[in-house]
Length: 354
Image (cartoon, rainbow, N blue to C red; front, top):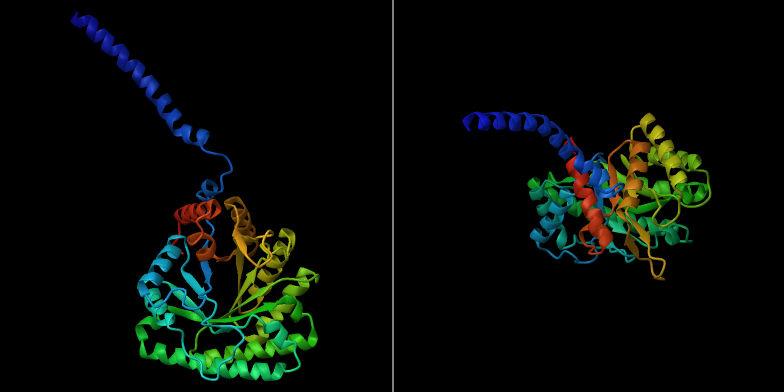
């Protein structure tokens, strides 16, 4: 009996020794066979799109004065790969003040940014009627009023940062809130006026606190994208801004993917020749066509991934998303949840610290 048991044991061990490698190979191959093909969140895990920036639009006292609320926002942004939050404005609307004050939420935002290791870019006034005002008959007066207010507001922030040197470390630079419509740059008089206005804004800002200045542009109109890129390059040279955030304008259907690729490629080459940097702004939204008012809907994760890939391949620079807060963190729709999953997996798939 003992001999038979020994023989049986021998054959069992022999069979197992042959079967185990096959079983192990099957187990290793199994995930690739059963994983859903083409799913955006899974596809992102095998690639790395360096997402470094996103925008915040603080309406009124949306975040109140609680640093913890800001800190929660910044921690979530960092969890999705965003290290730089662009506060598009600290003043909003067309009413220009002769005695501006810093918004109550700004100190809380600065404190929370410092505590979470987030870098802020701070804008001053955003005027939704900029284009009408700069083309109006009182354009020179308008620019004078705006610059006087900007000088006071920038000085206030500069004084605050000087009195609070710890939170000063959380501010990466200034952001000019007035977005540049490319069509104005193709018009001689409007180009001269806009360039002079934003150049003066940059000088006001850097006089208050000497740090880099960023500006945003978007493409519209029918001019060839290479020409628009050249106009933008000249604009950047003349204003002295350091970073151009270039919107792809796909979400509002101002560009096709081919046009966006052409413009990104042209801008990349021009920026490399000169002393400024272009950062693609990937729009992770589409306009809600069923709503007459301007409202946006989060795109599907596959659409966002396609846009990120286009921008990343053509410019080969870190990306900005518009915007993680609105279309990911505060969107409970299925698209918002899928975008959140996509960005988290993309973050885990990036081998380098951003």
